[in-house]
Image (spheres, rainbow, N blue to C red):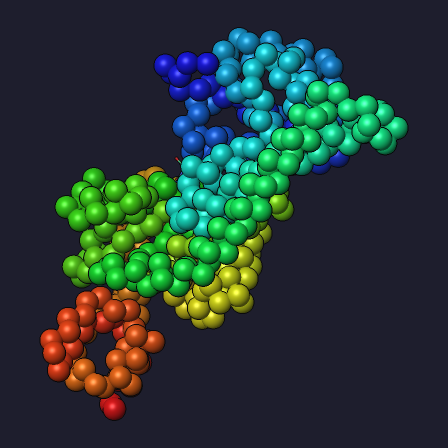
Length: 422
Ligand SMILES: Nc1nc2c(ncn2[C@@H]2O[C@H](COP(=O)(O)OP(=O)(O)O)[C@@H](O)[C@H]2O)c(=O)[nH]1
Ligand SMILES: [Mg+2]
């Protein structure tokens, strides 16, 4: 279809009756809101959405036959190009629904893969997403293949053209997966180098993390405002989701928006998601943004902590990453009563701007506590002191002047004191 207009999407959330009708309406609404946010984040226009109560999961179409007819009419009415079913669809269900709805149908995994693909930043992220994509495609081929096999009583000797095609596709995909895995290994080997380069950015990096729909992007826009810095262009070419912010003390930092956490992330996408969190690993400060008005706010908060702790366990993050993070409770404008919250958390509304001044102050103070930039002149033969700076600091600039080296480095107060005591 020609894309003169943005694609119009419908979000269909199958909701099993057992999941508890009226009582859990809030949960269903929250889940629908998440799916809408995800779809909107890749530029789809959401022209229709519905929670569809399932009495049973129909193997052929997931939804009941009456429901399929009703939905078809609605989708037609709303001129939908793509229907997103917020569940896992079997290849057969997907095909049958495409036929019935007369539009493209994608399931939850397909949608998330698209989002990760659009947002992957590092080479590793892009490779991981492609890998997940291929594995997803292959699993779909495998399933129809075993289905054919079964029809033939387990032997493929009579293989017709359809079957041969599937086998060939499958082999192509498998080959590509093998090559991708090799590339990934290479990328991992050079990962350290990239991080080193990244650290040379002369400003501390503040990364926003949290569930999708928590309000990270809204907060990103609110904090960065309309002010566009000349230096922004430096980052704009790299990434539109990194921008310079001015803090009250005059300190500057780079604010970095990230792909959000997604509830019930399909397991085959976890590696790809983790790769998109790479840049969080390089951040000087993490802003953990929560939707304080979400029914699962606490569980979501704990999920994020668990993933970040997991990154710390594998060495991607510092063990004490929690000391360089700030909990931000967003959407307080939606709350009827004041929050019962930890004393060190900050309550804000990215939408109304409430609490943002205090957040700016807190970011400023935290960055001030952690790293400061210092310049030293070191004799070129003093390898031990140079090594110390490389190990403990972030080298911003180095000029070799024969016998002397001028070096500018960002150090924590403790490391700086130790270095200067020597
Ligand atoms: N009421 C209210 N809505 C907000 C607030 N912050 C964000 N939102 C809304 O929440 C939705 C998701 O926000 P977004 O920034 O895209 O979330 P992200 O997925 O974390 O980047 C959008 O509809 C925002 O308008 C807030 O402080 N109050
Ligand atoms: Mg966002």
